[in-house]
Length: 353
Ligand code: ATP
Image (cartoon, rainbow, N blue to C red; front, side, top):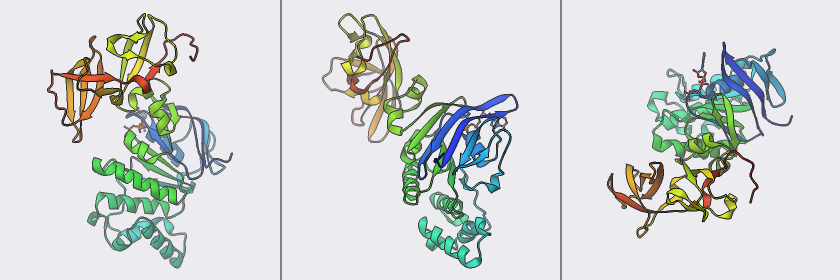
């Protein structure tokens, strides 16, 4: 067991309810993982089990080679070398920045404590704010104090529970990127919990997408997007639509979708396919004869996000520059570019090509 964190077949129950089931994941030293998923999928429960706040009903959790949780043995939360950053930062309002950061360092003598606090202040670029109180700081600054406080005792792993969710949405992705840099530069192993995939992608090396307490896919952000393991992952990641289509005698897909290239496999006429169509698979093309009705439209500044109707009533998304302004009910000329589309095979045995 060389991994920094090893979660092995963990199940967590609340009475008769199973919140996390048979979950395994590992993180190497310095890796950043993410538990991503919709509300209620078990992210926080798993994080709390790693922190030592919930018992495991089955499986085990080990940190840096020491087993911390099994159904029979539970190392207390305060004895685990785990740092936590919470959604609301949980700073002490009556302590200034320096004293907030020093909070978990009572085991050090005064000089060592002072040196460590200075180091942490510099790490999060808050040396000039050492005397400030939390209410005098911006949300982003408070979050950096929380981070410095969690990192000060030099934990084996940092657990971040929705650390950006109380911040402005504009700021979130930027901060996630900044925090990633900081953790990477310092070789900190960390796990982030979030329901926001942009945050997950901006920060994590590996993302575990949870669905009803189980891992739907654990992978790099790139693979989650481009090679989703199942339809749940496909629909959760990115803004795609699952579209059903049939292959005709000439190899063309119904609904005017066009044809798939050979890299997607060989499909027999009459076969029913499920395609994950993402906005980047539907391109605006001024002179196209394929025109789809606009049934939804959202202004995104630089772009419009359109919801378009296929002939049989299914919907596909399309992103255009925002000067392409077609009213609701109007028709948008488009071209399908199915090169990168994700195809889900019908439930029968297939050959790859
Ligand atoms: P959110 O994003 O909404 O915080 P989550 O993915 O973090 O959701 P959890 O908080 O882990 O989800 O909850 C998973 C499931 O366990 C939910 O159905 C929740 O209602 C249930 N649950 C959580 N805590 C308890 C508890 N203390 N007692 C009973 N059930 C609980």
